[in-house]
Structure formats: C-alpha cells, structure tokens
Amino acid sequence: MNANYLKERLQDYFPILYTGNHGHVAHEMILDINGINKATGVAAIDIAKRLMDFGFHAPTVAFPVHETLMVEPTESEPIAELDRFVEAMIQIRKEIKDIEDGKAEKGNNIISHAPYTAEMLMANEWNFPFTREEAGFPMKSDVQDKYFPHVTRIDDAYGDRNLVCKFSAE
Image 1 (cartoon, rainbow, N blue to C red):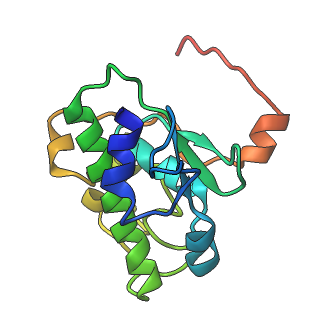
Image 2 (tube, rainbow, N blue to C red):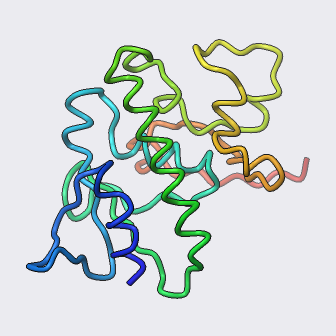
C-alpha cells in the first residue's frame, strides 16, 4: 500500500516502471532516471546522494534496471514520513528542472556535488554556485532536526574495490 501511495504522489514527476494491469506496483516502486540522465547528466546515484541531504538513506540504485531508484517503503512507515519523502523527491525534481532550463550548470549544480557535510557547510570557503542553505537545508523543516552525512562524494567504483576501514581514537 505504501509503495502505491508513493507511486501516486510521484508519477507526475518521475516515470514509474513495472506497474501492473491496474496501474499498481508491488511492495516497491521503481523510478526510471534514464531520461533525466540523458537530458541533464544527473544519474540515479546523484539523486540517491542528494536524498542524504534530506535525511533519507539512499534507495537501491540501478537494480533491477540501469539508472533507476528502487524505493521500498515498509508497511509500518507513517504517512508523515512518506509525505516527507515525496516532498524531498519533488524538491530534487525542481533542482533537476533548473538544470534542464539552464538555470543550473550541468555537472556543477546542487545535485552533482551532494551530499554536503556539516564541515563543508561551516568551512570558510564555499565555491559552489548555490547557497549553503540550499545545499545543507533543502527543506525548512530540517532545520530543527538535521542529519548530516559524515562524508561527501567518493568515487563509488574505487570505494567498492578498495574498502578501507579505519578506527581512530582521536
């Protein structure tokens, strides 16, 4: 039921794959990012990383189809959290639209540099073409209860092949 709720709320913003004869999805909803990627250079992994700035764990990326996001909400997820996820995805779609409309640069935009750590947001230098507030606090409701990722972008393929675990007592 929750996956179908999300599908209904997001289908005007993102193409949804694998709907049944009556337009329903199963326990997951798969967002197709292929068209967005071709038009803007924004990949599914970019959207997954941007979701961290909204306080969400990234959904499954590129499975079962390349350049997709598989969202699997649990049936016990409260409606307020589902709505917060929808608001985040709509905001991300607006950020993508800015790239499509030429208001934001391909490859140098709020999505392509996400996620943003607290350290980045507090640093003296800020060399991005958007504000710290837009990057780190994309929804006004996050100001009181904000989760910050501890690391920003890494080379995903390199990280997958070269796992380094480090403990520091500093």
